[in-house]
Each structure stands twice: as structure tokens, then as C-alpha cells.
Length: 605
Image (tube, rainbow, N blue to C red):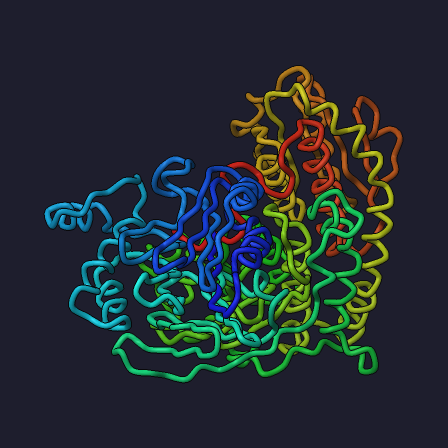
């Protein structure tokens, strides 16, 4: 949440800052701003709303500064308006900030006693005045470090200085920050995506690091004011995957390319010649794993819940799942014979990273499943399994969810093989079936026109329910989450067997109820639950791979997914639920790629 860009150059930077902010807008989009140094003074321009509004302001009143910082905001402290938009400036410095300063109220009181006048409701202005105060007696690096020492919370900072017009500074604790290397200019950004159009040479700051950028020099310092060296990484050239192409929005593109991303991921993990899975060098001997703990937030948590079924079906390993924000505050009994697996699209999810950090401090073995291999979670894990989905720009996760499930399923198969808990024939059969998945997804996507008809039934509904059993239950949760995220319609996901234990009271005439019923061992029981819904007036949308006309009686719509290995049903059922949420939101004229109040990468608690 929130996006930072900084550029130190020998030419005007405002245009490049605006273009980079547009790429970062998926991280925050309730206000935007820019600051540059012009004629020895801080020139600050900001507005509420989207980056387009800021661009119009700059068109009427351009800025010529050769060093500058920019920001897109996702509000935490203070309502979204121009006053609360970043940057926040004093006479001496200008600051953009991603994160939360937990002790801002106390710091504000102390600064007010010193005579500083606050204009905004934000916690960021505290940073501005703290730094201004320290700069009275200290040099840049020491003043920044003294400021960081005062701050409690998670944050990344971009800073301009009136008296050092050529310098852009950055600092981080908890929130990601990247540095980019370019010819005759250098860059600061919340993530590499915003910098890729300008450079593919990237360094990532670690917690406590400070960087000073000029157009021809980058210096790094640690919390002891000591100059340090950082590794430079070369990013892959996948620019085409981060463009909308002919699609109306990123989400429709990302839904429709899932057969391709799945095929790419399978190629990375499946050895075509040996008919095996290329996962080696586990941080712990798989035969000695006593328990697996799966940890994630939101959609990633749902992929963990799905994986629990696979792991317990294919291996004898006891498996637990945990929401990251709960895990880090519980009194955990850590065990070195357990494998702790962290799932995150961005690899920067604050609660998930904090849970990983807790595990590292307790010297247990960790594995991360992420979409960004250069991310903080990946770099701090003992073992990394990328999902190879390419950049996902839409705030509501689609192809990353499919990718997370895919890697978790592949891992479950591999563990069962290494532990000797699956026969060679069953192992090869699972791999053979898995290689069919891209075509099965494409076949499912080819039916998406049907979903547009179904979506109309949700327009006047006051809510919706999603029901499933076994592997279908986590997909029901994910389907409900997608509908909530995109259309702002209340939706609930439940295990179908729990209907009599309370949720049945919600069923009334015309309520849309999505039933997930693949032909598995739960099928008959799920259909019985469906009949209970129909008897009470619920409007049933059935998603199944069983073509039975009798079962379909009194069902409003039936969407048929291809028949496949039961373990692949979650992937195929996910597709129509993504499309359903998309089309309901589209009919309601919601902002598909940037749902209200949500941010792509949740980098604060």
C-alpha cells in the first residue's frame, strides 16, 4: 500500500516520476503528489484522487527540478484529500512515506512543544519535522538514523533536502524499497515494477539501510552510519506481461492468461524427460518433517487451506494453517522438525514477513512461495518456490492464486514421492494429469460468456453465499472474497455441511447461492445441501463436472467444468468464480483493477 518513487538526475524528472506513479497506482490511489527542488526551494504539488489529476496540475504548472520524489497514497492516517496527500514538507525537507508510525501521537506532542505546526492528519508529518529538527546539528546520514531511531512501526521513506538539491535519500524498516541504477540518473521505488521502464539493475534495501542517490552516485549506509556495499540484481525482461494489451483492464487479462501462466509454471517444475518434479535441496529432510505449518493472508491463506487437503491426502504429514496476523501474536511452540511455509504474491506482505521473521529468530526451517523472487520474504527464507505468474497488477489476485495453489500441489506430490508414500505409477499419473491442466483451464475460459448471463442475477441481491465441501470449501471462500473485493456485495463462503448449524437462516427467496459440486466423494452430500437451499427459495448457481439433468432440476444456472483428476478441480472451479466477480463488478460499474479501500501489496499491519 502506497507507492514511492524518487529520481536523481541531470535533467527534469517530473515526467518520469508521473509515469512511474501510474505504474505504482495499484499500490495506492486515493491521492498523489510530487516534490522537486527548484531554484533552491522545495516545489510541492499534490491532489486528491488519481495520478491523472496530478498530471493535469503539472501540465498547467510544470516543475523543472532535476531531483524529485513522488507518491501515491492508500490512506491510513487522515481522510484522502489534498492536505493529507504526500509529500509532506517543511522549510528544509520533503518526505514521502509508506507504512505506519505507531508512536506518531506522542512524537507529535513532543514536536508541538518545540513549536512545530502540523497541517495534516497524517503520521508522516511527524517524520518531516523530526528530520528537520535533527538536521540543525547533524549531517544527513546521522540525522536520518536519529529519526529512524525515534520511529516505531513499519515504513519506507523517500526524502528531498532543500540544502542538498542533487540528493534523493531513501530508508526502510519493514516496508520494501528498491534502488535502480541508470545512465546519468538513479532511482528509488517501492518495487521494481515502477523502475523497470527505466532500468533493470536493482538493489533492495534491507531493514535499517539508508541510501543517498545523486545522478552519478549511490551510497548505502547501515544503522551505525557505516558505509556498506549492496548486491546489484539484473531483472528479467518481461515488460509485455505488465501491459494490458487489447484487454479492457488488467484483471481480465490476468484471468484469461492463466492457462499460459500455469503452463509456464509446470514447465519450470516438471522434468519432461525423467517424468519427475524438479524440487531439490529442501531446508529439512522431507522424511523427517513431522508437521507443515502453512501461513498466509487473504487469498494466499485460501491457497494454504487448499494445500492442507492435498498434503494430508498425499502424505502422512500433519498439516496446520494459520493466518499470518494471528500467528505472530500467538504463543507458538516452535519445533525444528516442522517446516514453516509462507505464501505471498508480492513477497512483501507485512504480517507474513513478520511471521517469517519470528520463525527465523526461533531457528526453524522456512520456505516461501512467492511471485517476486527478489522480495523480502523470498530473500529471508531458507528455501524459495516461485509461482512464475509474471507481474499481477489487478488488486484482486487471480493468476497468483492459481499459481500459489499449483506450486503447493506440486510440492505435495514431490513430498509424497520423496517420503515413499506414493507408488511410482500414481506419482507419474499425477504428473501426467497435471500437464493437462493448461488445456483444461483454456477449455473453462472458453465458456466465460455464460458467466455474463449469471452475473445479472447478483445486481439486485443484498448478498450471496458460496458452498463447498473438501477441496471445494477453500474455493468457496475465495469465490466469496473475490465478489466482496470487486463488487462490494456482501458474500460468505461456508462448508456446505455447516448449513444446518446457522447459515441456513440466511437463505431466503432469490438469494444467489453458488454450489461447488465436482464429482468427488462429497458429491452426493453437497447435492443434498443444495436441495435444502432450493427448498427455501435460494437461487442456485451450480458449478460441477457431472452432467446430470435430474440433479440440475430447479437449478437456476449450471456451469460445467471439464472432467479431470479430482485434485485439479479447485483450479477449474476457481475460473468461473473469478469471472463471476469480474462481471458483477463490471455491471455495477466498479473500478475493476483498483477496488475501493484496497491495496495490492499490504505492507503495513
